[in-house]
Length: 96
Image (tube, rainbow, N blue to C red; front, top):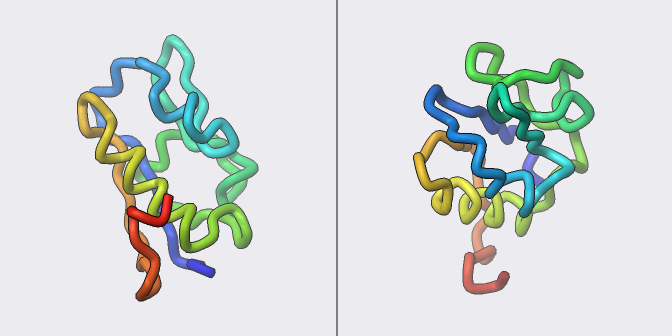
């Protein structure tokens, strides 16, 4: 399982709801922007995670979940979802 995954939101979110619709356990979108949920983060803080770059808690994502996060980030209409993670060999986007 990936244990060094970091997801953050850069400035410019348009609150479209794309990420929350696909992964509500990690993303929360309000009129003020998008945040990474506190229960998904090791530091138990709810924010964009832009400055903190807190790791996700163990068990929040498996290897295929990391690949799905890349899909979510790539699909963001303003490209503000950022991800830092290692994808284990043999896990491909085609598997989703």
